[in-house]
Each structure stands twice: as structure tokens, then as C-alpha cells.
Amino acid sequence: MKITVVGTGHVGLVVGLCFAEIGHEVGCCDNDPRKIETLNGGRTPFYEPHLLELLNRALESHRVRFFSQLDAHLNEADVIFLCLGTPPLPDGEADLSSVESVTRRIATHSQGYKLIVEKSTVPVQTGDRIQRTMQIYGGSAAFDVASNPEFLSEGTAVENFLHPQRTVIGVESPRAETLLRQIYQPILDQSFDCPIHPHCAWKGKPTPLVVTNRNSSEVIKHASNSFLATKISFINAIANLCDRVGADVEQVAQGMGFDSRIGSSFLRAGAGFGGFCFPKDLQAFIHIAEKNGYDFRLLREVERINQDQMELFFQKIKHEVWVLKGKRIAAWGLAFKPGTDDVRFAPALAVISKLLAEGATVAAYDPKAMEEAKAELPPSRELLYCSTAEEAAQGADALVIFTEWPEFVSVDLEGLRDSMARPLILDGRNMFRSEQMRRRGFEYMSVGRP
Image (cartoon, rainbow, N blue to C red):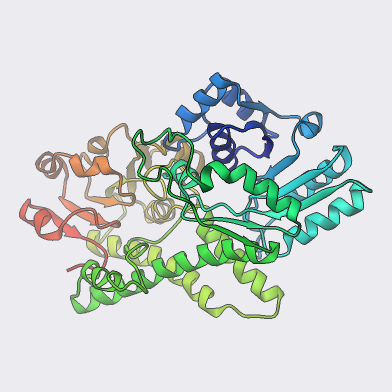
């Protein structure tokens, strides 16, 4: 089928290239000409595993085109996926100005039937707003509006799209349902050749399809992210208790996770969650509830616990180092999670800002997120961006681990210990075993473990 994807960010680009990979003809539009030039040149504007390979395959097969002028290409496809940014406003409400603007352009410049699909994370009843906008500005144009939330995790987004745990579509007409079923059929029956795994375990195993109305589909996305954020904040709260009573949060989480009603995923304690989705979606869902007369106190507490977790981790660093002013602190990891270069709402940047405010010098390293971090926290005499993990730790009074990149595990620990002014490690992701690190001569502190 012929598909237009509006927006080539972390969602839109994955969506467009994966649709091309399973055989559709895709046009990807973005209002940033530099991004379009980058993509047409065979380069991706951000790091995501497997994405560069998919881009080159799609360009070679001519199944994807990138352009910045939406109006000129609106009539090349019957199905338009909206993958637009919905950043939080100061009060936590999602900013839907891009969604509204693009919808008006579709209404006023398109001809013939169009299926408009929300792929962005949007508040419930946004589909109703899109439909009303189309009716106001589109005259008698034939169209449908559907919801098709994404469940992509940065670092595994391509795999998540091609091998989803479920596909959700919210529709209000049989025609919209039929079109979306046709688009997703290769994924629903797993009949395509997987570009990631030559002998893919998913081959031929059907993907569950949830068909519901638009409003329910929109709630599913916010409810899913909010529940996962709740699990993280819960285990972080348990970790804080474990720190105080001498228990081990990893053993506690293991014991909990065997219960099928709970499960083990998202029960890893740390310095707090970040990224763009969880913080933004929590705020938006709280605001949605407020607008509809419900005080979602549970999610307010989830949000507060996450903010407190970053502050508690900073206080742990300060307590162990004592006087931060004039000290060199090594920071390993800047991205909010491994497998991505995304530093939005990353705990690392929040804590580094506090360290700098206390007069410390921070030497930072991340294998993928250095340039993104520099845009948020420019280098200076007090903030050094290093070329290796070992360089960052050289002469440090403490090493703080913010992101669990696999390469950190393979560092020569003896050489690391000897290169530091003080062999103190504060592990915000519980990468290492406490007993092992102490046997090797480190002062070692983690989260929720003795």
C-alpha cells in the first residue's frame, strides 16, 4: 500500500522504514529540511539499532522517499500516519499544535478519501478533535480518523515494531479497520523476512490484534506507559527501604517477579527513569484525568518518587564525597537508557547539573549520546566530555554510573582502580556485584543493595 508518514522523529522514522521493510511504498515528510537532506543522504539523524540498515535498504529498493513539502505530496497515499511531537506544556498538558496544524493542511489540500491515523501519543478524544477539524476545514471530503498507538522502546524500537507483543487499532468504521488490517497483515501473521534475525523465532507466529474504538485505543497508550512508570517508581521506593534495613532489592525483585501476576519486567531499581515518553505521558495522563474531574493521586506520587530518586542519588554522592567543590567526578553514561542517544529528561543530566552547581568538575563519557548531551549541557572548564570511559575516570575522586552500557562491564577494573584519585564508585544502575567490586579494592555503593 501507499502510505504517508508525517514526522521523522524517534517514532515516525522507525514507523516509515519498517513499513517500507514489509513491502509498502512510504513517503516520509518532515518540516526540517536538514533532516530530510540527512535521510536522503543515507544517514539517520539519531542513533537507533538497525535503523541505518533499514534506511539504506529502503533507499536502494525505492520503497521510501523523504520530503519537506507535505501539501505537494498529500494525494500520493490514501493512508496518512501522524507521528508528530506532543511535548508537555508548562501545566503538563500535551501540546497538540502540530497535530492540529497538519490536520488542517490535510483537510484543505487533499483530494479523495483519506484515512488519518494517530500514531503520536495523544490525549483521549484527540481523534474526535481531528475529525471535527477535518469536517470544519475539509468540506465534504471523505475521510476516517483512527488511533494506532505505538509501543516502541528506544534501543529496541525496530524489533518492537516488527515483532510487537500486540497491535492496537481504534476505529469508528469498517473501512478504516480493513485498511489498517491490510497495512499490518505482514506483521500480524509474521510472514515477512526479518532483517534483524536470519532465523527469527517469531516467524509465522501470529501477533495479537486489539480492535477497539478510538477513545479506548488512546487511553491504552497512556495507561500502559503510566503503569510501567508506576512499576519503576515502586521498585525504587522498595530500594530506598532496602538501603535502610540492609535488604537486597534485586533479591526482593526476583522474589516478586516469579509471581505471574506481577512479572519481573521493569522491576530494576536505579537512579530514576528518564527519556521523553514516561515523564511526558505521566504529566499528560494526570492532566487528562484532572480535566475530566478525577484527581489521579497515584500517578502524582509516581512522578514525585521519580523526582525524589534523582535527588536521593545526588545526596548519596554528596554524602560519600563529602565536599564536592573542587572534586573531579567521572560520569559514565548520559543517555537515559542504553541503546539510544536520547538524553531528554535523563537522570544523568539532572544530577550532573547539581554536581556542577556544587562546584565539582565533571568528566563525562557516553558511547552514543555525547553530541546530544553537549547540546543540553555545553562543555566548559567544569564539564569535560571525554573520548573513553577510562579517560573520564582518570584522576577522579568518584565514578558515577548513570547508564548501563554493556561496554562498561568490560573495562579493566584493576587499571580503573589505579587510575582514580579515590576508587569510589556510585552505581546508579546496579551494573556490578558489590562483593566483587569491594574485593577488587573499590568503595562501592549501589541502589537498594548492601
